[in-house]
Image (cartoon, rainbow over all chains, first blue to last red):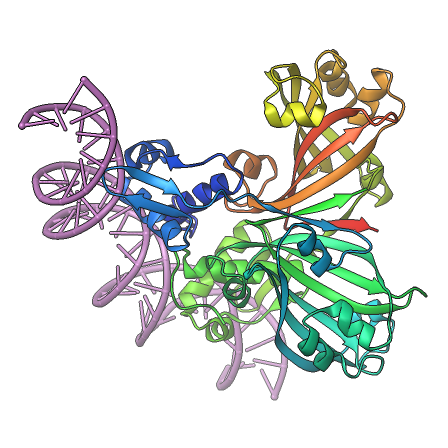
Amino acid sequence: MLDDRSGGIARWRRVADALRQEIADGSLIDRIPPESRLAQRFGVNRHTVRRAIAALADEGLLRAEQGRGTFVNRPAERLAYPVGARTRFSENIARQQREPGGRLIKADQVTADARLASILECRVGAPLHRLETLHVADGVPLSVSTSWFLLERFPNIVQDYAESGSITRALEAAGLSDYRRRETRLTAERATPNDAQALSLSPDGLVMVARAVDIDLENRPIQALRTRFSADWIELVFRH
Amino acid sequence: MLDDRSGGIARWRRVADALRQEIADGSLIDRIPPESRLAQRFGVNRHTVRRAIAALADEGLLRAEQGRGTFVNRPAERLAYPVGARTRFSENIARQQREPGGRLIKADQVTADARLASILECRVGAPLHRLETLHVADGVPLSVSTSWFLLERFPNIVQDYAESGSITRALEAAGLSDYRRRETRLTAERATPNDAQALSLSPDGLVMVARAVDIDLENRPIQALRTRFSADWIELVFRH
DNA sequence: TTTATATGTCTATACAATTAGACAAATAGG
DNA sequence: CCTATTTGTCTAATTGTATAGACATATAAA
């Protein structure tokens, strides 16, 4: 019943994804092979390749010039993003000579479900701040996070974050001088439409999802985090 | 909820992806909502939902029963896979009451390119063993790895691995009592057809790609690794 | 048994994706 | 200037995707 000729993904998009990946890992630089050659290599019609290239050109990755060829626009090296106990977004980015920034997308209040209650060591139903934040480097969006804070302990976290654009500084304002990450759990998913838009990804872009818990110096949980990193342009680095 | 514009991805596949994700993170358990309700929720026709469900049933995730409803087959909790300096696949798996296993898919010899030479601290063109290995728990494939060893230092690694099914034991056979991981770099990609088959993924399944370097007790590089983890059923855990 | 609710199957239609072929237009190199 | 190469545009035919409606069939509960 299920026709596997195309598993629900258009061939031009598969070609586009393959090319994007080769651009991201540096296999494709400067001029890419002509359409006819790519069509042969992927086993598709030239028009299908053209559509894939058009999509990547739309993303700003490729540039086609009639008579000359098609070229890669950016050198496009993946940004290394170190993750550790003391990971601080702003420091991470600044260390790589880029200008960090943070923006509050949304903020509301929710109640703790069983999972969050267990993570934050509070009762089920406890009121929480939920923040949706976007993090950029040199104006390029790198990740979006959803974070949960105990309303009781951090009543003004939303306003503090909105003013400073940095969780670290917002926590300082709440009297918390230092904190660290306890653990990070990683999976990969397809970006939701919302995240894809926020991260300027193609509608089926991939994200690495990091669920993390931050704790204070007395090992009490501060915040639960769910961060989505754009998989094409970020490489998470763990030093052991 | 689902974007109306078709960006090269069939709507039935987006519905299938959304449902698969909800199954994976536990939002959907036991009986799922009826087709008509899902159609309404996703803003698509009932036939489109049916096709998505058929795809997931094909993967063994769902089971439709006429007159009763559609049910989730597995509880489908992601297997937590701890990653650290002393990560050992067999120990990791055994600790979770599962039976680990390893199988050699392919072995050949290659020469070091610039990247490998820099990682393994050898000259460009140095002969290397390249091993393609599959790792399973309770017979379920979890990851595939490509690993590179200096031929000079580990001449018999292929045979040793083939006999023991464990890198740790193969290295012991070469006189290396202990080793540890220096760093892990993570990205996410769409599975190649080869990897998808080896990992029993749907043809467009996602993998987490971990590039790692193992070093001996004197900090000399032993092996370069590129491991692909099935993203739907594995969660990588980093303790800091 | 009757009813409401589910999934299963069929037909039909409109639109998108893919392939194919032909030719135009720009570029680079003898 | 001529030629080979490469991207750009057009038409046409075929296959895949999505919607719509009708009805069959199985299940559980009143």
